[in-house]
Length: 144
Image 1 (spheres, rainbow, N blue to C red):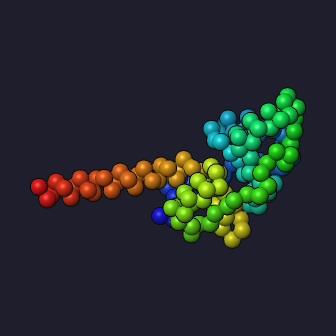
Image 2: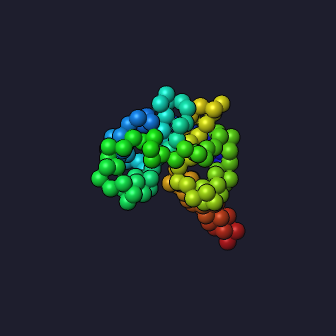
Image 3: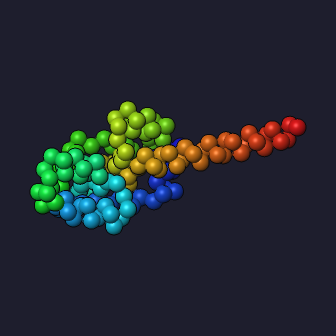
């Protein structure tokens, strides 16, 4: 399966936050959207960075109470690992595991087209495994 097919099933909504937003605003947005990361983008198309719950927790440990007033740009990951619509989900699974990332922005012609999370990838794999198990069960039933 390709990233494009996965996005068709889950949707291509991307939650973005601007570089000048505060961590307090980011935290409220993550909670409201019930997500673990936001793409940092000032125009909604260009990926400036990514910021996750993990970044917020690390920032809290380092900066304490001052964290809430800090800007997203001060805490975000700047070197963002991305993927493309034509990438294979198996390769994405490997990349996420190898690089220890849980969210990958999807780019189409250099512009933001979606986000794939580790949860999306695991859900897809579980559905594939269930389908394989059902096919094998049906095959065994017919052979008996």
